[in-house]
Length: 443
Image 1 (tube, rainbow, N blue to C red):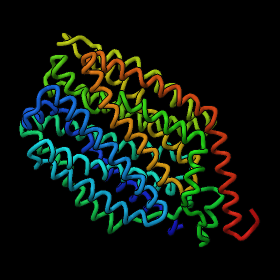
Image 2 (image 1 turned 90 degrees about the vertical axis):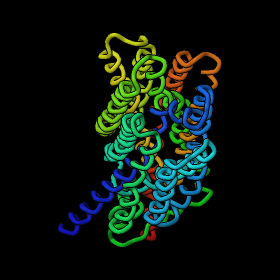
Image 3 (image 1 turned 180 degrees about the vertical axis):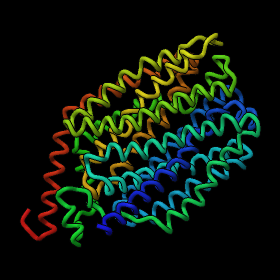
Image 4 (image 1 turned 180 degrees about the horizontal axis):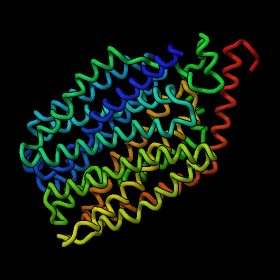
């Protein structure tokens, strides 16, 4: 019993470390948003170049290049020590983030943001592969929600640091502030982290692995074909593309939009966006617990939760975007920002849990690298699409069009209601067959 408690303590410490490191890495993701105009002025860019180069092009390279590189990291995740890979990836993310504070022109900024994107993208398949081996299927929505909350909190913290430090001390310092602690945490991680055994949380494998038998599953390129044969995977991939377009408004343009187009101060605009960001944290964490409860009632309820909340999130987001300029009262704006943040965030941890629950342990790093690439395509091309819409229609119409992309996302999520339970049942059959192989039986 003492041994079990000790292991539980080490696993809890491992999750805490993953959450802290993710928080700091994701704090970088939105550091430019509060100070887009200041960065543009400092680098000699026009307002149009601000939206196209800073809001569009850098976002594209940040997410898409990082997503493409993580395909390799995802494959390596399923073959080699995740602890060693994690340490390397964190350093790749933290170092160029720190150096961004020293960028002197647009080209340097572009290069450093691209390198930072590689680190942030690479940590995703590693993190969720580890979560899959720390928690049982019924507990994964909460586990994913905990780490996703740390990621979301990181974005909020980064936005807060940039929004309040940037106007007073310059846009460069926030990059150094959020990067520096991870140089300490990565050392702590290397010295103290305990990597879980693959497959140990699966019901049909747990006793075999704990008794000393080795899990026999190994990633190979043949399994990639099987990944795309799982309908829930394909729908999860597809919903990520339109779903990330309106997130581009939140992450890249919303802070500057409230300051420049709605007449709020940079600080007040930051508070509004922070309110929406704080609400997304509540949506992520609360959504994980709700998803956990609904999954245990019936697995398909998890998919239905994602579909409904994503679709309904369009309404408060539209109200927030179309709130009057230079408002006499800000309370209603904060209210719709809170409601929008809660609804649009619930899907995140639950779709990740669904993906974990339909894929083999030896493919989870690879599946999340593909998931991240598709997500990155949405995040990267989303701001580019929004930039093009701004050129054609102006900011307010462009943002309203972007908001409607969540309807397409909701429709694709609704289709998972009909695929998730079947795909999960097929996985259990495969794991039962794998267990027979491990004990030398037929199958």
